[in-house]
Length: 334
Image (cartoon, rainbow, N blue to C red):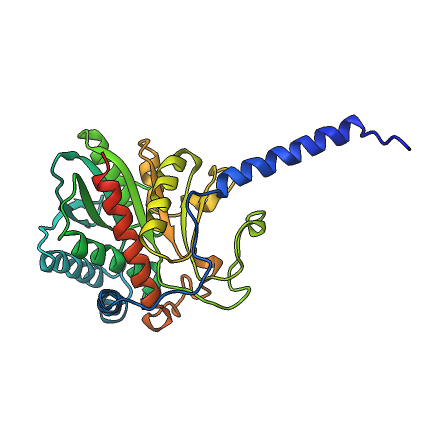
């Protein structure tokens, strides 16, 4: 029998390849199982939730429309609407006001915990848009889901405090500047010693498709994930890996809806930092984004085609159910 031996450079290359693949597997491997069968029918509660979600998105994207520092009247109308919905859910909203020239507003409401009230979980979503877009998916959908979570969690007794925040100024030119709402809040929380155990950014949660090849990815992650855009993604930097894994496991236990997870170094996948969770990483707070993956599936991203009619509110209701279950578990676990 002929003896075949590998050259040293081949051994090094194979070792490197296996090492890279093992690391990527660590980035994508998540506990629990994602749904692989057909969805069950919506419950009556989810049907009602779907209608409320659609109402919130319609109000922000259609009635208010484009909302950012260049449209201050609309911007303030969106903030006022969010505050009023918090009040209707029997929460007491308050504001962070900040800004060098203009006054921007984070709208905040808290569901106070009992035995561990000083430990805080932040659930946030930005309510501003890019110019010339009504921002139904980006990010009226995230705000709508946050408002629905707040409404339903209000009926639950929790050990930890859940702080809901509608952030101003996530979009350019404010991203990661002193006028970014989430960065302002993260710094203020750090300076006053708030004990934040984790932050969850709700970023674009409305666009889904069951068509083949409807989902894209940055390479090499297309090798590991499905090509159908029917799932919700949990995305963070590698330092937040433990928090993401615990959270997605709670989500999968609470709702049978397709879900995928990714924890990757920012230098490896730049897009893991593209929302409000990145502001909290500066202060060593575990944080992740829950998203429909934005431009990797939604071709209306940052355009005037991002309208309420393009979203799937039943899917949003299912995702909301899973997130409520997840946040409840995070807030009651000792």
